[in-house]
Image (cartoon, rainbow, N blue to C red):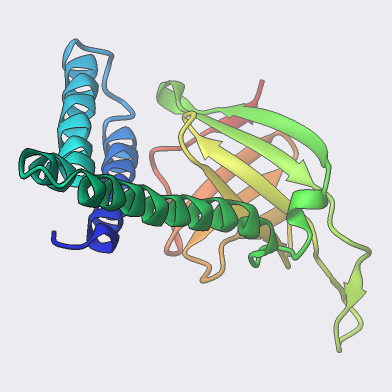
Length: 207
């Protein structure tokens, strides 16, 4: 890592990788009971991150200081921090720009109209927050186009945002490629993945 930019880029990519790994672990181990291994793993990741960041930000400046090149050391450290700050700004911009992603152009401005927790077999849960869309549009066939949406969380995991779609019975929500579908009718709800009912979430009823 000979340039401050590459060191800052490496730090940013490392952060992205660690976040993805933590989210993956949270999803895979969501049914596992709390054990001492979990805090041990998190503390190990913290120590590893401290070591990696220390190397990326301080290794070259310290080497320059040893070589009695104080100005170059300060310049190297300042440039690395400056480039990393640019990546932080990019992360912040991405964070706020998610409100303009598809799934209803003004989803972030909508207020929830209802929230429900469905309790399923084996203690599994589906948390759902429903949003009312814009005024209903009309398709070429004269039928209204659904504009509502829902944000659901399975067993307290990451939130998934789904758009309301046309349904012959009940209310149907799906992601962009229809690979994940959330369906509710009255007090009941079900989930489908790739056109098949999700067997881990059966007999889901509101509390």
